[in-house]
Image (tube, rainbow, N blue to C red; front, side, top):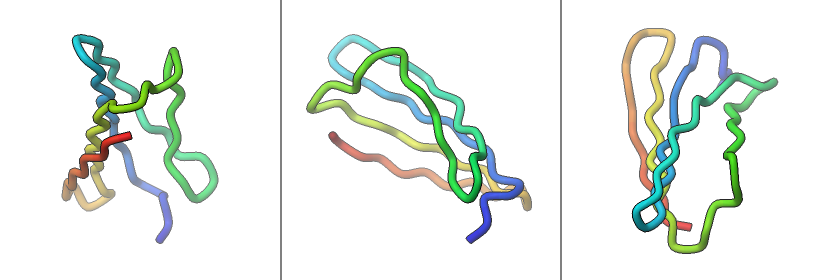
Length: 62
């Protein structure tokens, strides 16, 4: 799947701390860089938007 036209964000939550990361297209992937290491037990919520305007979400736990 091509990453062309995709955009998105990631919300990293750890305890009371939260950081929102903007996902950017890099080759055939979306990447982001956190200000600090993501702690074990953190929750990462991803929101994606396709070129057609449709959105999707996913949630992960580290």
